[in-house]
Length: 309
Image 1: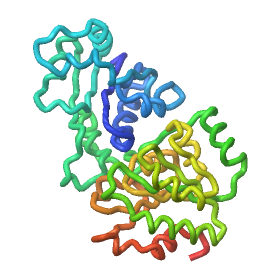
Image 2: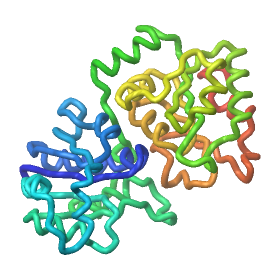
Image 3: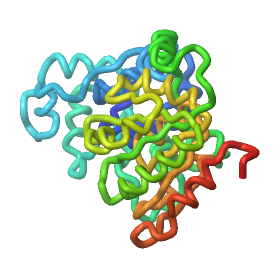
Image 4: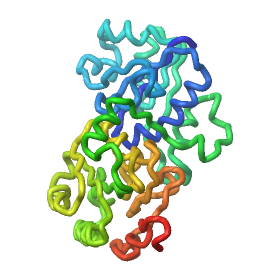
């Protein structure tokens, strides 16, 4: 296998829990050239030799790829040339009728491995195991927790951007992301307000992070934070989170990014299953019906700095 392509759409968290499978491919064929077909914002995290996964990335978004999802069409010749360069394609695209896979075969790809992009609700194990299961050489392997951890590797420009916001030697701080991809997974905003007020009164520095979907919550919480990082490039955000004394968030892509960057993580879980979606090694707080089991006081106790109870 000299050239290997991984195809992975989905949101940030979906991509990040696929990284252990990507790492397994790199370990199996360390001399191969690796490429990824995905969404540009996420590809920035993992493209480039120093970032540990892919030598090149290409966007899934061009309309010219649409013909690959219909049987019998003339395929875009540029895409045919692109796919034909690879000895192995590992696809985690949603392709229930197999049309995309059949069109890949028309490009004379010698080996195609297919993985389901969605983890079954009843899976009951870390999501990374689901994606590793698409690799024939890894499907029956027994993996330790460490092998199921996603990791990202911010580079010098990312760390420089983090230092521009935080300074070169910031005090120990808590990073907080009050959002997720679904409102049903979010701790009530009034709880976040109360939490940040308590932390501010205690003098604990806070880095507030979020993206465009988190705008209303960020605007309400911004006056209570020490620093705010809003809609930053993901490599820069990873560098910021890697400096945190602890990260607090929901079941979200940013939580997986914080864990992958090396921050100790506490996750507030509502309706989703932490057995599947909690980053390995994370502290999990279950909210219960209406978040009754996840009071502000309990969260404050769980995220207290070491030695303070």
